Amino acid sequence: MTQDASTPDDSNPFRNKHIRSFVKRRGHISRAQERAVEDGMPKWGLTYNKTPIAFEQVWGRNGAPNWLEIGFGMGETTAAIAAAHPQVNYLGVEIYTAGVGSLLKKIEEQGLQNIRVMSHDVVEVLADMIPDGSLDKVLLYFPDPWRKKKHHKRRLIQPEFVAKLALKMKPGGILHCATDWENYAQHMLEVLDNAPDWQNMNGGGYSPRPDDRPLTKFENRGLKLGHGVWDLLYSRRTA
Image (tube, rainbow, N blue to C red; front, side, top):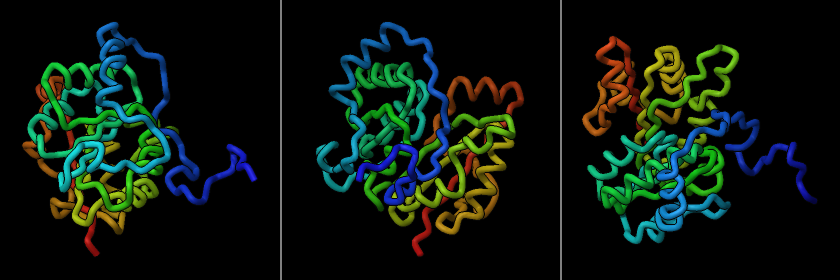
């Protein structure tokens, strides 16, 4: 029997009652970004489908750590991290085409070899394409905080999401979140501190910004104006 689109799929726990954490709007994209998408996606892009990613095959090497960045924006931080960690299989997922084009342009300009790019809802990517127990690290930097209380349900970090994300992690794998919105930082802390699969790597509370998370121009400007930034580091419990 063909399943009706409105019926939850019990075999796909990520998608059940899935409320999207983004609203797809048509934003400005430059011609250079369009060209980068046209030229770069066939080379560096992965197409969403329901086949699990074979990391060794896609990156052409065995035993490398697998990192996933959720929502890389314009790709400035992504390119810097990937360049500093060439030994890592780096997968960036971003829904907005302008950001995808911007990162692809940086990949070519900097000669980066270890990044692959997807433009799709990360919840569906995790559900259908990321094998269980395959990720060493997940990065979530400055996600949409959904400031209005009535929109808090759209925040990506929710108990159900972090429980299912844990299934995709290797034991001891790291989740690194950062936000410049204090209420969302508090929300993340509460959710993750109460998640049985995750352990706060700072022993409690927020973590200092680790050296491997570059300070962006936007963030540096905000800090000079007295704006706060909160980092949270959690590891996947081994037992």
